[in-house]
Length: 223
Image (tube, rainbow, N blue to C red):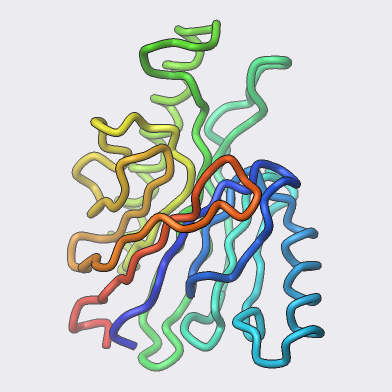
């Protein structure tokens, strides 16, 4: 495998339509069982639909995160969830980072998929209350995710990340740890050896967030 497509979509809970528009899709504000249900519907209706061959991975520790992966490209091996903070009632739910460790189908290389949804309204202009709390939670979540990225790379994984980082357009969501794509709230990232191209904002299909997608070319050692 030399290249694959990567996307992210905030589904706005049950309002957005799950679509399998990339080889890897990071979903936030998701309802995982509805994504799996949609996949089954597509397979029944269209025998050749892209949904065939995909697996959807979530965690009972955070029902709003899910990762869909094309098993013709990547084979899921294990998953883990890291909680960033417990949340506060009527302010924010508990948030964290979902990691899906995979192997490339053709070359058996290690790839780690890192999905997350950080707290909103952590930057000016502040449209919500709880300014200090939101800044603190966003910072803690970001720090944790970047530390996890460093650990995964040290273990030999090529990292592919994405999700709704709730990051202003002029601020990096992955800082210098990953090569970043996107300038809105939703971002994609990969280890520095990779190369992004063909970034696009796509139809939101019912959500209040557009889908984003880009082509990721892996380094030669991942062929």
